[in-house]
Image (cartoon, rainbow, N blue to C red; front, side, top):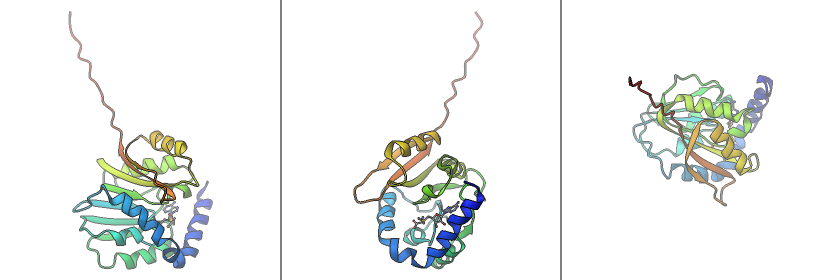
Length: 195
Ligand SMILES: C[S@@+](CC[C@H](N)C(=O)[O-])C[C@H]1O[C@@H](n2cnc3c(N)ncnc32)[C@H](O)[C@@H]1O
């Protein structure tokens, strides 16, 4: 999928920005609840990648250090802007999730709700989320069940160099919720010994 196709996705979400919350808020909030069960976002830097209309940003009730939402759809971001209006140190940025405008090692927690199925190469996308997450940070993503079979989704997570530390496959959700940390390479140094 080239940039031309990403533009089509952008256009689709621009067109649906007005009705998105009405149609999907309830469903999305069930996912956020699961994702937040094991996450304390107090005083840390948080990225919501593919934040859309900012529904998730608006659900964060604790005081984070910084709260950033990025999305490719300008119209969706106009909605997100309303959601973060009263949140200190919060920002929204129009950007492509595969080319994030952040340095590596920036965020303690990175979320990506219902976004991966829109991307041509989910492994590439996950690698980009891993890049901007701190080495000991967390990445929490959902995968739509109708877009990813379970074994395929787990394979994508594994191929992206993640360790799955939490996984929810709940009947009440139309997606899996995966909590991930980067796999670290353990290098054993061999010392040469003279005999
Ligand atoms: C189904 S919506 C989910 C929005 C939000 N995460 C939520 O929980 O409601 C998918 C979002 O992904 C965004 N998206 C799709 N492709 C993207 C890309 N290449 N870069 C950034 N955002 C993208 C869309 O614009 C849309 O807002």
